[in-house]
Length: 447
Image (cartoon, rainbow, N blue to C red):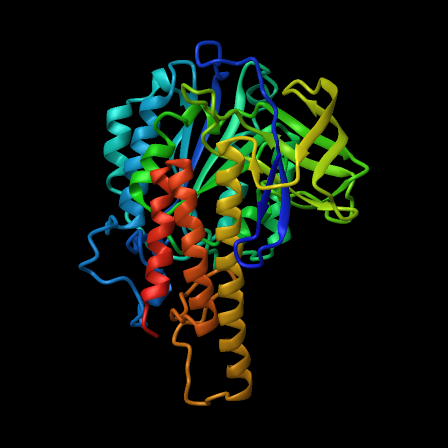
């Protein structure tokens, strides 16, 4: 548990982290063999550099060519490089298929055991791929489903069925309804065919991907630079493709706190305060030498039901139910006694870092929403008939907007920077320097 002060409002806030520990170790964890289908977006938007918005071609506010901090190769080239790495991680008893899609789909490799595939020849074939055409994600998902119509393939409990879908998620052809994509993923999951989306580039449509991956067995990762792309599929390849448990439900009973917000559980329903977490699928995470998990965390923001005095004395009860991959259900209950002073306190560095990052993201989202509201509300009032949008975009295609820092948020960023810098020092975590760079840029930026 943690007690802290909001860096901008100076009010007390209460947090708690929850998690599930397994008995798995690096030595005992082994993934099942896979029927792996790799589905690759080769549409025109994949031809743009990894650090650019594809539909900003006619705008001046794109990244400069002399920006050497980022890999300026195309999303397509980097994706092919990553897929080649994936092929090296496959085991001899895995089965593999590869398809590409733009306006239509193409089969690069039919489903075969890895030992029956000439991997070197396949890699050479991948290098010939060029990005062009529209983006029909619906047709791609239909093609993926057709690969698993062979009944013996999917009823073999020894094999996991996984689609690895690499895209910038900007469909512009075929069905563009969010519920259409979502229902396809849901139907696949009912047949134990699960999907991992790897979102590519800074113009990835995270809204679409996060929405359609809430189904059983699905997950997604967004990568904004090639280095992190390769790192993701280096040590953690087996982990991100292997569900650990399904249908997790955890409830909180407390006479002192209600759950105000859950970070890290997109399925959480704010109207059901007793139901703490509902997560369709949990994947294993790696721990370091200090038994600390690097990666995702579920953070609860707690709202006191009454004014708290100098001491906290309360008992909370947690109950959790979940299913394993064979559908067997497990339940566990635990009581937690809390006796502590009502002053700033962090139970561990993990919860402190989570709170720091949640405050960072919350501030930036508030700023973005404010500036966009100001921009587009003014446009409605002062509409200029000479202003033209050169690109006629679909609902899922994206352009950037000009960077604007209003005075009120510049001052908030300055206050928050001091708080964030203190967090870096206390946590001794250099990974947070990338967020500090963004804060400095926003503070120093001249409109």
